[in-house]
Amino acid sequence: MLQPIELSQSTRLINHGPTVMVSAEHGGVANVMSVAWACALDYAPSRLTVVLDKGAFTRGLVEQGGWFAVQVPLAEQAEMVMAVGSQSRKNNPDKLADCGVELFYQEGFGVPLVKGCAAYLICRLLPEPHNQQSYDLFIGEVAAAWADDRVYAGGRWLFDSVPDGLKTLHYVSAGQFYRIGSGLKVE
Amino acid sequence: MLQPIELSQSTRLINHGPTVMVSAEHGGVANVMSVAWACALDYAPSRLTVVLDKGAFTRGLVEQGGWFAVQVPLAEQAEMVMAVGSQSRKNNPDKLADCGVELFYQEGFGVPLVKGCAAYLICRLLPEPHNQQSYDLFIGEVAAAWADDRVYAGGRWLFDSVPDGLKTLHYVSAGQFYRIGSGLKVE
Image (cartoon, rainbow over all chains, first blue to last red; front, side):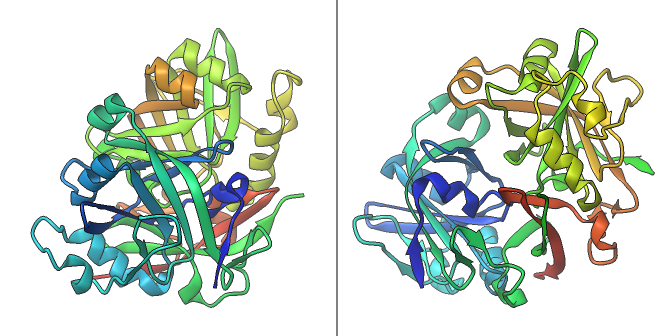
């Protein structure tokens, strides 16, 4: 079940470097893409960066709509993550259905979210035209965040006690992911 | 043993989201800090981003010297990673020795590197004053990269066959890291 996460703690949802999916909607059109290059940028206000290639359909929705969501998928969703990262809605209007994506919305936000993920961060685009044009680099300010209490509770990930399917995904290249592994605490 | 990595493949060294250490040197002064917020930005030219807080001593060395290195530490170095991320050279001129850091240099580059890491990316700073001042965001262009063939060979990480101490570290908060886990290939 999704639980709201304080904005000041929302960077914890991506701090360990998972591969994410970015979703956006504009003019009644929604899309989702996979993004390995996403990173926290600030705690207060909570901000993050994502790299969105000029060829990506979702990038246009972000630029036009001014909002996007970053969601942290689980290992059990790996085939979907690979599929939405490989197909483009430019060539296939049925991309989301073909990739097995089911969308939902949280109250108060018109940003589509992908069912079944570990965590969600809804972001308002901070327009930085030079970064977007020169580096494909987009900055978002987190407006709301949630995590699934199967895998994140009490401000902590539960990776040491969940099954492999509920671990986050960390992409390398050519279809090769690693799941997050065991915890290590330095006092 | 360190092996050179083609620049076009160097983003693979950080693509899975490890916590890194950033090192730099200027005017005969070297320093190292831990950075959880590092991310690939482009393949060709190979570029990456790091977030360096205004309070960080290393940030000044990067700004003045124009070069820095991103290195990917191993789980067996977790205490050192925590220590160089907690102490500042501003308060302790002996920080590196106290944290157990041993530096070395690769031929042709005056950028200090930390012994014992999985991978190294030496970067030239691409000055972007607005990003640096407003967001603490620094962009580097990778000039050379190496990986330790105990953990990375033939263009691939060897995480499925190395012991826990040779896995990469993924920081969350308050001393809590996770090691990278098992592989998952989507064809």
